[in-house]
Image 1 (spheres, rainbow, N blue to C red):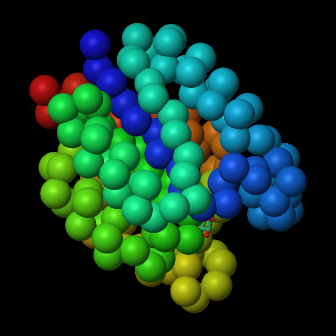
Image 2: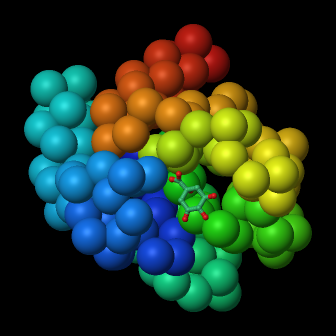
Length: 147
Ligand code: DQA
């Protein structure tokens, strides 16, 4: 069975109360439940994780090799700063879909740079919590096409 890891970065544990005008009122556990239902309907195995720590995220990306077939990565602010996460993605050679709730290109200049995009199959941003479902569909289609 195809297995996908959804990895969330810093501050995403606060979804629901964090800047709801930007990120919406859906909590991360609501999103997890939504993703689990979607994955079950697609017959895909799902792991869902969040960390506020860059090193822990690097470790989780390493551990995904041999366990999961692809990673959906909302790296939060580390998207814009982390060469370590970019290198981790390159090192494991797993397909990655970069994901953001907000449209990072319509926001501050510093959010327009993504180190993850350089090593991602594609990027989904601006669709709020629904983006997670879109990312699952995109990853499953990518894996099927490359099988
Ligand atoms: C985010 C966008 C990032 O710029 C920001 O730092 C986040 C959340 C998003 O999902 O829209 O923490 O990744």
